[in-house]
Length: 106
Image (cartoon, rainbow, N blue to C red; front, top):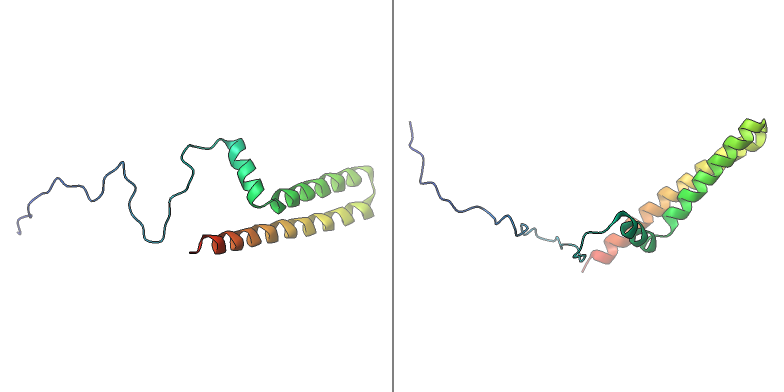
């Protein structure tokens, strides 16, 4: 049976200091953000996503209202509009991701 080598008390990294990862830059925000501050910052960075979400919610609400009233044709139209608004929202998210990744490259 082999004997273990000497034990060193040196840690591989210091806990108060984050590890150094090549190509990773820590965020520029020094204080923790509240939910409201984060929402406002993300909305300023990509305003099309909240617009798409509001459009999706509005089309869904109006479509359900029309369905409840018995206007089946208008309800179907609103459900198709909701799908289009969801597609717009997903496209806005993807464009925002592409723009932010291009912006972060040196």
